[in-house]
Amino acid sequence: MKKDRVFAGKKVRVRPFEFNQEVAEVFDDMLHRSVPLYAESIRRQAQLAALYFQADTRIYDLGCSHGNLGMLILDQFAGKVFSMVGVDNSLPMLDKYKKRLGRYKKRLDRYKKQDASLSKQVDRQENTSRIDLVCGFLEDVHIKNASVVLINLTLQFLNPGTRDALLKKIYEGMTDGGILLLTEKIIHSSPMLDDLQTQFYTGFKIENGYSQLEISQKRDALEKVLIPDTLETHEARMREAGFSTVDVWLKWFNFASMIGIKK
Picture 1: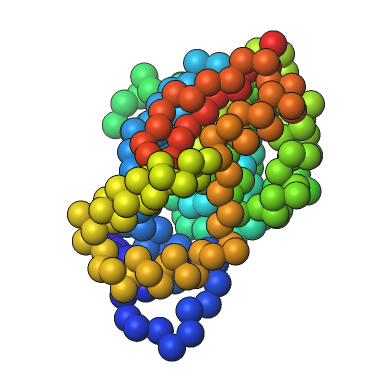
Picture 2: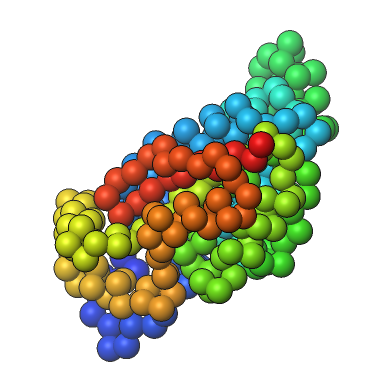
C-alpha cells in the first residue's frame, strides 16, 4: 500500500481537493488513516447488501471510487447471481477499479483449474453476474429496479442543493423492501460537541501518522469541496425522500453510517 504523502510538503498554494491520479495511487492508505472504522463499515455494508439484495434487481454503488466495497460484495456473493452498477466521476479511480476486477477474474480462473467441482459454479456466476462501471455524476444517474443503494462518503461532495433530489430519485427507483446505506462525515448542531468531534478526529489522524501540516493543508483543500451535514439533516432528508424506517447503525464522533428501508 503506497503511503499518502499528498499534503506532506509545504505548499505555496493549496489547491481544492480532487480525486486525481495522485490521490488514486494512495487512496487506500488515505482511507484507512483518515476514516475511523472504515474497514468495519464497508465489511458490514457488504453483508447488508447480501442480506437485502432481491433476485433480478440491481445494486448501485454511488461514488464507488476504486472498488473497495465492490470487491467485498463480490466475495459476499461468491457463487450467487447479482448485478451491480458502480458510478464515479473520477477516471483514475475507475481505472484502478477495472484493474482490480481483472485481477479478480484471473484469480477465479486459477481456482477453476485447481478445483474442477468449482468450475461450473464460477462459470455460472461469471456468465450471469456483472459489475458495470459508469463514469459520470450521481445527479445524472438513472436509478432503476434497485434493491440496494450504497453511498459512501460521497453525498458530502455534492452541491447541497442537489442532495434532496438525489435521495428522492433513489427512493423512487428502489423496490419495496430495498435499502439505502449512507455513510458520511458529519457536523454537530451543538458548537461545543462539534468542537469535541473535531478534537478527537484530529487526534485520530495524528495517531495514524499525519502531521499538523498535512492535516491543516488537507483541511484547506477540502474547504468548500466537502460540505458536511448534521445527522439530523441526513435523517430528515431520508424521511422526506420516503424512507419510513431510518436508523444509525454505526457512529464514531463525526462519522456516521445510516440505513433507510423502503416499505
